[in-house]
Length: 495
Ligand code: GLN
Image 1 (tube, rainbow, N blue to C red):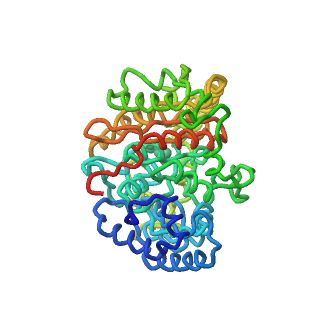
Image 2 (image 1 turned 60 degrees about the horizontal axis):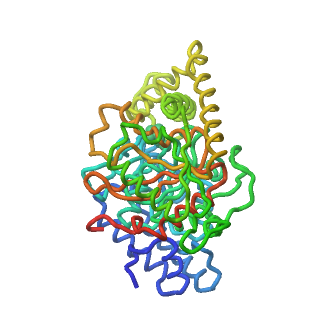
Image 3 (image 1 turned 135 degrees about the vertical axis):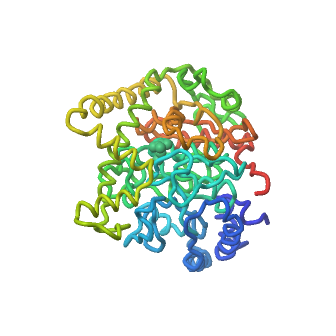
């Protein structure tokens, strides 16, 4: 048998089911590995005793023969999901030491499915960032080259999977935070259609964009995890009323005209011209084109489409997301939970000092931008215009989907950059979100699938975007690609 850390979700689940391995053994092995690789900065909290107790409970279920597809599988969660048995910080000092009285719905579902939570994962403060360098608890390091960032905001979630510390993690994606770190670390991640996963207990950044999703090594593993975490939740007003989905079964559904060699026969993949601009770095372009050539070999046809407002997605997102954040983050005032300044004169002074001490610079920047664009006199000029353009961006996608089934392109314009490179120039990092923001604004499902390596041997992800509720189709295409290639199986040297 392979070492535990070499097994993905599906593999581990079947080893557990066959009783070749117990969940307790798997948990113990991964807890030691997490400790050995502490320097990566992936985890903010490790819950050894709690995990072992859950693993024993899972072993009892496995012994009784009533295991589900995820029973006993160890995983870890982005520290933006509230958890009753572990602290939750959202990567912020303002929530240092915070304990939630309840579990986020996504976490409660994964726990009920028998997964074993080993701990909480590093992320950018309140999920604002693209490099995990905005975490109040220090950076996370890319295992492919520790002098580079893992991407963000779900940086810890990506590092934990890429370094084989856990087979699967949860992430969240508001403007690319699952897809971009997945691309930077050579793993697979899916952001489902807005509303597929409950946002209840996922600390809000920009509520009209925030969406939960899994990060793992393969599309198959993501399909299993997504089935376990998604579904209607009456506690989230934007949760979609649809029956529970079996994304793994959807992933396996063969297309009409498909054959062994051509599983994607008839699939039309649209390539927006705007996703391949002159500024796209050559290494990323080459890897993405190679991935597309593989998809063609599998029977897909490539068609040219247009997303003419791609560039506008950046200002639109960086108005709407901060606007919503400025409102969502007003709850952190030192009164009910989290940090409170030690010394203050009166209530207003307490608010001011608490927030000045508790929030980091990027969060403060967004609160200021958001308050500005929502203020009287600027609302019409900025926020309202951004909302109108958001609708037009979503409409552009529908025009594309009249000509194709999926849209493909790069996830990010470059491979992972070096630590410190984006720090002094926040707008530079905002521009690098260009390919993930349009799909987010439209609420569409998107994936990152590893397709090659670029500068410095760093991984490159292919982005696939589907129409609403076409997660099954996305996973099917990604799975077919992964059956034919081995990029998703490659581990960074030493891991
Ligand atoms: N990089 C984007 C931002 O900083 C996206 C973050 C996210 O998806 N949470 O807002």
